[in-house]
Image (cartoon, rainbow, N blue to C red; front, top):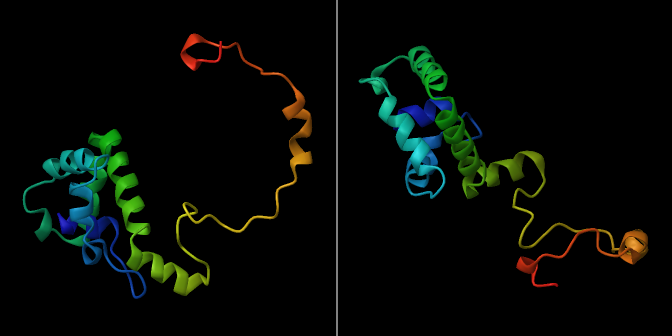
Amino acid sequence: MSAMLDTMIPGDADFPAASAIGLHDALTTHDRFAAPYAAITALLPDGFDALSAKDKEAALTDLERQSPAEFNALTVGAYSLYYTHPQVAAVIEALTGHTARPPQPAGHPLEPFDPAMVAVPAARGPLYRPTPEAKDV
């Protein structure tokens, strides 16, 4: 399945290919993305690995038309896991000079908060009707 992932994310002189960072293993073990990955890989034509680059792209385009929801979920998973991989994040940092870490849990530096900004809405009463489920009756 590395051939499929490398067709989607081939890499270049700076960025590693999908197979170089173990994207296959990450997708197969992920709670959210394992099912769409398995669904799309099950639909790959026999001999996919031996196809030319152009034919691989055409085969993936056909799969996208056949199973748009699963293919979209696979695309979201592949790119999410790829761009959050430490090796890819390091490339992003080197090329841009900006940190490529998620904003949580460390967060990003923010200006000091001014509570006066929310004084008017904070002074209002609740804008909802309490329900027994919320335990604020």
